[in-house]
Length: 116
Length: 405
Image 1 (cartoon, rainbow over the protein chains, first blue to last red):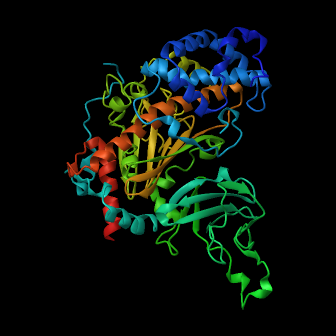
Image 2 (tube, each protein chain N blue to C red):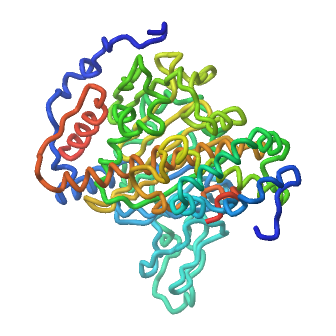
Image 3 (cartoon, rainbow over the protein chains, first blue to last red):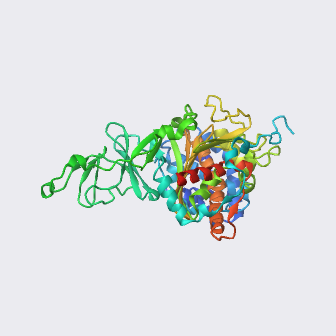
């Protein structure tokens, strides 16, 4: 991802690119190891821009997006990944099984957000 | 109380099934090695088991391998050149090696890595390496050993009994037929799935998806209030119905739920599985919302013995519990969606996936192991079921019937 950048209209989200991770496991590991204050900062910054982000993503067909669109999508997906920590739990993880134990099994292989 | 508030539950589900009784149930079936071995022989090696869906093998030559430890075998499921779905024991006819070692793939045939014997996708033996050095072989009799396979609404079932006592259609019976017209194929064009080995008996997992009584407490911080409402705080179901050996429940929604900010965005730009309130069941078969309740969210089809299928408006999902040992289970979950048209719809599906990961996989998965560890203590010998846990009682009864048959 290092060679990619966000679409110009979303340059303000560049400070959060460390969240644009390509796999569920990587995003979950980051959520579990990041402080709630940092998670909330990412959440707040993203939420403010999500209406625009989704209106932008809505213009792109679901397959083979340009690299910058894919990067924005991954950033939005990271928001989806951490949203339960902020909106439901007030802490990084649910009180239960560690989801990092789960093995994602891609039975339809076209989902680029879930590189295994 | 709003007009749609649920009345005090006048209906006692157990009243419809007096033969099941109302007493406590024994814990022994969850911890007994002997009971586990009887389940293996008298249930899992006898009944139809859901191993996947046809979308996993769309083209001729596509295949997947399903290890079935509980049946002491590995099953190769393949689509042959005529487009038929076939299933075989994944075993070379020569000296018994496991034939295919990949999880899935596409191939015009299968080559045993031991001595190079080759098989066609229809299971027939194609070639024997250095065949002239063998004695009196009839290749036409040395194909892969077939396993009975059946397709219901795109779900692939296998039965390892050489002579199943009933067809898949008869096994699924009335409740199977009642799903005709539910758009499984349309909704199964995209999928997230996970596997995890949990330290729990397979029935501990299955039980959690046979009742929604736990939703308001166990999922109280996550999804609980999307379903339970002030008028129905303990999420009494719209329907609990038994269709031996299967069962069905229909689950209310909290129409007054105010979505979280990201949830609201995800809902506006796409459809979430099982998480949308005021769902329309128009155009779907009556089985989906059998009481035609406006405050309906999803219905569950408990397919005996080890699969639960939950259907809703925007998608469906399955949980399957594959027994590995009396206290170990492979939990396999798949959430199906219609393939997203835009990147924004994909975001909505990712949100569904993420909340499912926390609100189901983490929260329910934690309970499985916490429960099993204490069942194994032997401190108690029985547990107690409410009327809302009818399906668990029924599952126990069906298992006992199979073991005593």
